[in-house]
Length: 73
Image (cartoon, rainbow, N blue to C red; front, top):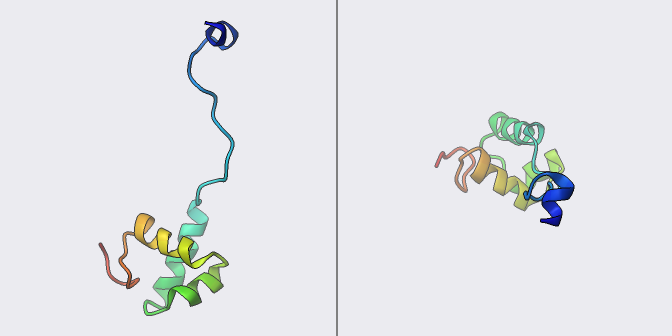
């Protein structure tokens, strides 16, 4: 009841945290592999200044590509 009286709602406030990957970063990863489809994750991660795991996760989750960057899921 206390929370409802203070805020008018029982919903939690948005929490702060590390920002999600934005579209700019996804576009730069996509551009890196579009320019050279056989590029390695290591080379791409150096170009876009992200960790290999982040580049891999972007490829899988956002760009729907398998281990080989030019293979769609």
